[in-house]
Image (cartoon, rainbow, N blue to C red; front, side, top):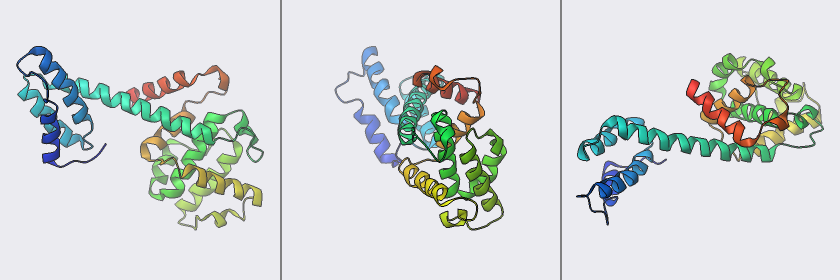
Length: 230
């Protein structure tokens, strides 16, 4: 979503009326469908609400109806975004990981762990909040847990967190694996929202649940259920 000027938003809303007979119910419905998409593209919730009220008043539609349509569009976009990002994340997961062999049996969890490690490595200020939500014992794989414990300890104690700082605790091969995680995940653009999804993957992990028993579609439905609860 892009931040747009007032004039640009007004222009796009007016453009939605092009070729539409606004004097008919069908025309108004067609206009609203287009207008909802324009409103959903507004990045600022406050600004979006202002224009939603304008559209509602202009078309004599309740703001509740407008917001319901907007929420449906935004929910679908979040779902598609999460699915896309998770697919990309899984692509990076090593199926035959010798440094972190448990990752071979827990690909989703290992990928989520690596994503969290990358996020904290680049966002030290988020360490306290992440630790409160996700203590180290929630990590499924031992290697990633060790990295997480070491990294969060360094951040908390305001120590050096460069890759070389791990040399005293990890073997050269393990440090190489940490470097690999940081390099690969740099392409995913992991932000706070994506990191929160990764955290939820680990918090909802059940040891008795086999990896192959969960389809990707079921997995993303769980993401949506988690969002509804939050």
